[in-house]
Image (cartoon, rainbow over all chains, first blue to last red; front, side, top):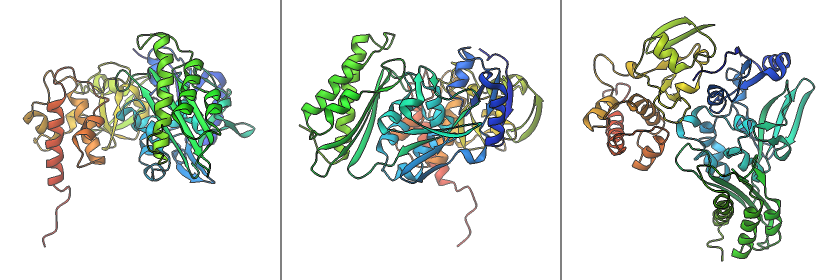
Length: 294
Length: 164
């Protein structure tokens, strides 16, 4: 299994990469970690005529906390993120959960967060987490940068809002504020398989203990990962309770629109979407010191 | 396209198609067939090699041109001075292989892992190897081998200790 032939451009700077992308338009793809793109090329699911390798652009691998956000450059790798100061501090439990389960440990050495978001696999981990965390992406093109909320960035299966000649250069995750926690959970047949079902939850409690903000998203449950807005609405204003969790989980069961495959039937996957939203919420509440929510 | 890469300490320069995957470059252009190809889609870990000595990468999911200017270590480069690498010796001692197909990738993954985590727990070893498939051993002896290698590598300091 060999990829179709392509021209290879090793960009040395952002400008070089953008110039190559502008020149080749829709025929070009960005090569970051390559852990999804290269297998897809081998299976001839992707046949770019030009690959623009951004791995040699040194200042794109950054992982920094700036202005209340964790900013990860286009070459920031899963492994580096997992071991970054920000995540080791324990302040980003949702992201730490994801880092531990993306593909497998060797794939995480090269795989990148931004690359996973750009790949937008319906069963990918990062899109689900980014939706729940309300991440945004910086997309650079000829006319400068634009910042897109993740909901607008993810368009459809394997499709994002990045236009021909543009490149996603950074993802930004809001730094969790006081009384905020999150969690990511998924079911997979074996390490490295595509998720059978996946869910991310993020909750912020008000001083009176009610839920002030919530982010709920599910994966492997439709053309791409999506927010379950009804689940978020079911939580906001409530105190953490089994009833509130059940309402959110039921909203996810109803919203999930999975396809049947060797990993399970539609009915099973819809049920698991609900089960995983419940598990993610219970894990997030536990992290907020809520004990066992009843 | 020209690629200059140092493999097991030897510098090579070759002309390759950009689509040549690193695993096939090692096997077919350089004749280093100790790197195996299993699933061909980054799932099984047979093809893992070391990039710049300390990073485990799946060589079926990286192009040879991406290794330009870098150092690669394959199973052929692990022993030094006719002596097996402690990881190789440990796999032998602990019967950590049967057919041997997954072994080069297992060892590369384990060596890189121990550089990051020199004294891992059993659970951490099992997690670190979770992207490497073995269809023979049931993994237990592989885990024992990594434990033996971890003990030996941490007992033998990399640099000479000054006399006190």
